[in-house]
Amino acid sequence: MNGTDALLKVDGLTRRFGGLVAVGNVSLDLRVGEVHAVIGTNGAGKSTLINMLSGEIAASEGRIALERSDITALAQPRRALAGVGRSYQRNTIFAEFTVLENCRLAAQAATPRPWAFWESAARCAASNQAAHEAMEAAGLTAEAQRIAGTMSHGAKRQLEVAMCLATRPRVLLLDEPLAGMGAEETERMLALLSRLKASHAILLVEHDMDAVFRIADRITVMVNGTVIATGAPESIRTNPEVRTAYLGDEVPA
Amino acid sequence: MSAAAPMTSPVLPSLPADRLTRGLLVPAAAVAVLAVAAPFLGGYASDLVVKVMILAIFALSLELLVGMTGLVSLGHAAFYGIGAYVTVLASGDEGGNLLVLLVASMGLAALYALVVGALSLRTKGVYFIMVTLAFAQMAFFVFHDTPVGGGSDGIYLYVRPAIGPIDLENRLTLFYVVLAALAGTYGLLALIRRSRFGAALAGIRVSEQRMRAVGFPTYFYKLAAFVIAGALAGLAGCLVAARDGVVNPELLAWHNSGEVLLMIILGGLGHLRGAVLGAVAFTLLKELLSTHALVGPLADHWQLSLGLVIIAFVAWLPRGLIGLVQRISPEGSR
Image 1: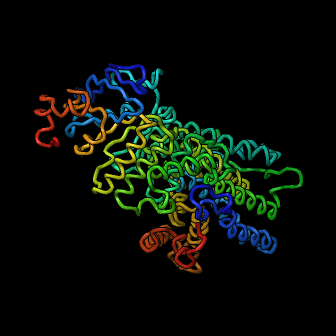
Image 2: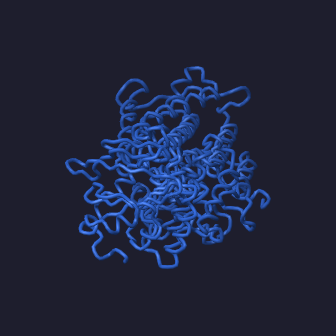
Image 3: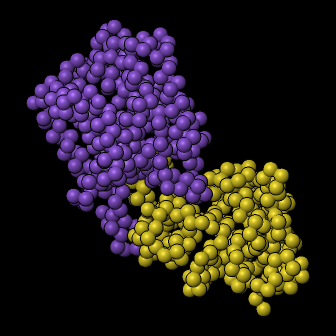
């Protein structure tokens, strides 16, 4: 079932914290054109999984491949430059900067030129271009000059994703992008995700089950750090093991 | 300026970080005033201004770390002291070449900063403070307890540095050299602030986690800032040795690191002007509070009155003196 077209391929990924196995032997792949949702109860290991995929923490075992190159040992910044972008569950935007500055700074990682101290960061054409595209995509163009910290929660979540987009990643690892969002903001974010799907491989960790079942092309269910099921939304919805372990009555009919 | 602003969104006002020329207007005017006034200053005033300018360079170098990068170092005096000792030790009995001494003192201070930074930047927060302090203490005891630099008494500089017609034995020449060094340091840091490197440092100050997530190798950025800050502190050290004609281990002592930290806090963190203002205010306060003619017997206890004044400052001006300036004229105080 694993075609060669997987952009990010994860094999037997494990992370132990002392005696605790936070993530055990997880394998999955992400393809362009697909939203792959990972669901599970709190403590199921979803955030640890994202942290390992983005390189924020090292894997104890297993292998991560981007296209065909092994990136398991790459440090987080190198992995980001290779095309693996992530957003955070808790906002990590630069609250005191404007929206444009936030996006431009993120984009700047691709053309850093740190030694060129005589060049203005604000006039970096490449970063500005990428920043404007990211703001456009996330629907933040009108807010470009707003101080990020003064925006609504929903707009901050959009910026969280926009900053990720500004780095022009091919793989998007999104940690609960819908957390705390209102209905209208959720719709906007889902529309953004479906647009991004065409050109990105997306891993979505999300608690909003309605949203997950609407947008996901594949769903992986984690319980206690291990995968208990992977498949199309329909098969997950009807999977008896998943129902008892996690979904319960939450599954939309 | 709007021509340089980018495409898709038409009405971008120029960003504050990009107002370099406007931001340098007041500092440039101050430099011009000092340059014109220098020949008319008396011995005491000239000495005091030179001292303040050297401390301003020292404070600016720490501002790069604390205000711009968010790295609170409590060992910055080590680089200042190393710059000063190198100047004296490399001068010999006939005096040294100013350019060679500047390069040597900045280079060795930068080298020590590379070692200290490489190790200390693996830690964060209060541990970083402790490790930088520990490395500074090590340097202090090297000069204090070994014969390298004359032990606790220090050593004298017999002849001040010179190069061609520029001879620091001449008070006015010293003034202009120090003024040029201050202007150069300020200009360099102003450029760095608006550059991509500076933007990355600002990002690291706010959220290092996010900076790594978008692809910045933050450790190397911080290390570069640490080394530049060390070199600039070494520059200040070289100049203070030339001014005083003597160096002793007190230059590297931890309370000297504390004082320069107080200066930039007093002036207002996050602003180059704050660092300069802080150096001016701190030196003047110290001078005033230890003058018998002004404060009577309290002058013997100037540390006490200085401490009280600083507490008052922090309580009423939490954003430093620069906050006061901004309150009076909100425009262009960046």
